[in-house]
Length: 159
Image (cartoon, rainbow, N blue to C red; front, side, top):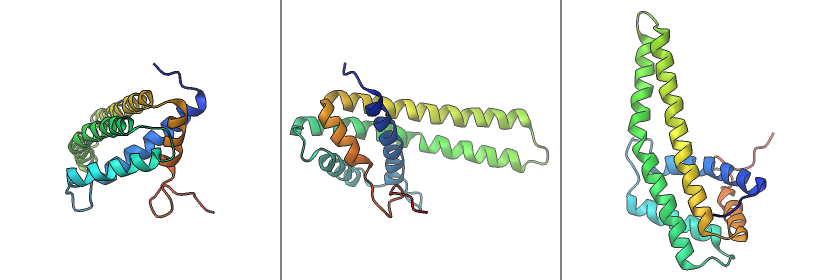
């Protein structure tokens, strides 16, 4: 197993949060339909390729990282319906004639559990992907992966 220093772990956690957002928006469109899986696969391959360009990463490493991330995004997509149901339950509970604090707390706890499950799943994917790469490759990958740019919701904040 690869030992990760604090800077690399911080980069991994930041990348994970950005990647989860990227995965969520890639699969979720405003009309409620999901992105075509083949198109998402191409998008992910392109992102991984770009993030590892200029490194010593082999085609096999790029393929393995892509497969790991694709599996994680697929698992996270499966949680989307559950998150929607929990939001509906919260809306119904808050719209009821009488507010039931215990019911609302149970819904909140379920939301936290789902967020934790999502975080655990993606963190596992990051560790698995990180173990495919050497330290230099990992650092280059996370640096480029995090460079989303303006207009993508993750660029530098101004003001």
